[in-house]
Amino acid sequence: MTETGGTAPVLDLHLRGLAYEGADILGDISFAIPRGQTVALVGPSGIGKSSLLRIFAGLERGYDGTCTVTGRTAMVFQEPTLLPWRSLRDNITIAAGVSTDIADAVLADVGLADRRDAFPNRLSLGQQRRLSLARAFAVRPDLLLMDEPFVSLDPQLVGEMIALFARLRDAYGVTTVLVTHVVEEARQLADRILTLSGHPARVASDTLNTTQKSGA
Ligand SMILES: Nc1ncnc2c1ncn2[C@@H]1O[C@H](COP(=O)(O)OP(=O)(O)OP(=O)(O)O)[C@@H](O)[C@H]1O
Image 1 (cartoon, rainbow, N blue to C red):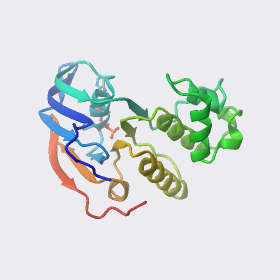
Image 2: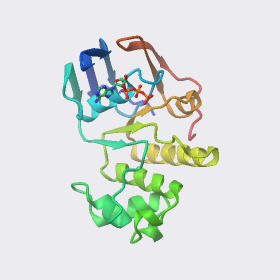
Image 3: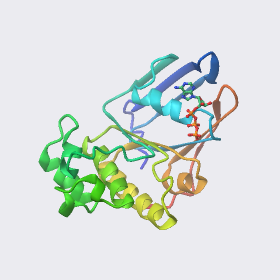
Image 4: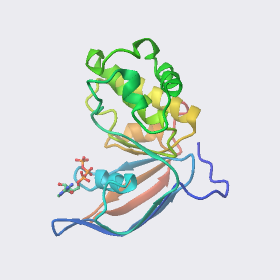
């Protein structure tokens, strides 16, 4: 999945620091992510993984440094954050530039084509997660940010979601940052594993993953 090919990185980070209420959370962290790469961001609870993801998403402004993202971002959260009063299709078309045709195509991609007029509260947890993935892919993001997207699912569903994500990522060729505390998920999905540690957090290791199972 890694395509460096001389193009500008999708993400270029030069962070000098992020503090909340006077407490230094993130320190000096610099790296770039080439187009097409899947990066797993790992580290202990509370280290600042979600904070870093929020910086990438443009949701966190109070940091020192620069973060340049080339193109569109989409985010998949731990919880699906769906709009219960809108149909599945309308949950997807709410994003700017997403037509009903695109919504229907992406719903078919995740196996929910026949449920497009249903409401999210009629879906199983697994279906809700699939809808959440569909919504993110529908905007054709240049950078997909996923914050523990497979948490609190049973092991069979985790396996299905990992396979679905890998299939969509390969089909759409999207660059991804996946926050996870599950080492096996990182090994299965990532081209590269960035580990945060310390207070304030820095990159403790940045390694290419040679054990990735293709197609998950
Ligand atoms: N808006 C905020 N205001 C104050 N402190 C915050 C805020 N957001 C996060 N923190 C603190 O910053 C630190 C890093 O939080 P963050 O959620 O980024 O960690 P994390 O590595 O994603 O943790 P986890 O794996 O448990 O989700 C934690 O100590 C957290 O309590």
